[in-house]
Image (tube, rainbow, N blue to C red; front, side, top):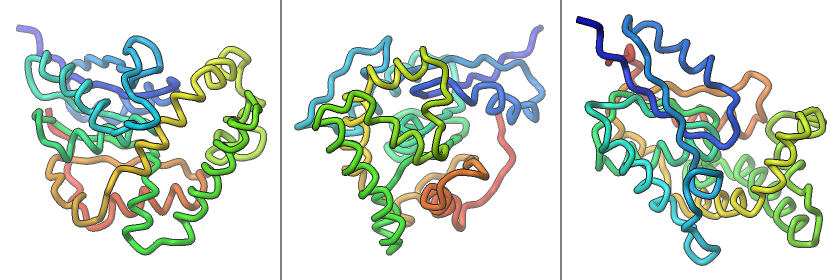
Length: 227
């Protein structure tokens, strides 16, 4: 009888980390079934959020609907805005998960709740300037946000097709940030996540992002991923 594959659901905006993420599951010693799910507004799932209601629960409910169709627990992986949604799903505990992987989730409210005002202000100043620039008519305002994460010149170095996708989905990304700032996250609430968890952050990432990921990892019990 063939081995039952480990089921991975990857939440993302732009595909970047699929191969490196999947490699972390080689310890499972079984086939891997990796499925992609873009958050609402990024293709495949219609946007249901509005500037008046950009709650993370809208995306969390969509992910939970997908997970309920799986014939067993799923390893939930999220990158950037997808990582924030993944955290929300894990905290809501409406569906069983095998494990959780977060890749650089922008969680400014965790920084604020932890007294990391300097790092919170870095996020707030960046997003305020980015959104103001877009609202003033700069179609490529998102470049400053991309460069915040990857360093100066990151956006310009992307392939034209990827840059165009980022530009076209800027209004959706702004809704993401509204949801991120409305996500009341604290170290105490994170303690409720009991499943095996892997936190990933780039070595060259912004120091504020490193600190946010460090707070998620703080005092967590590190355990081997299990099927």
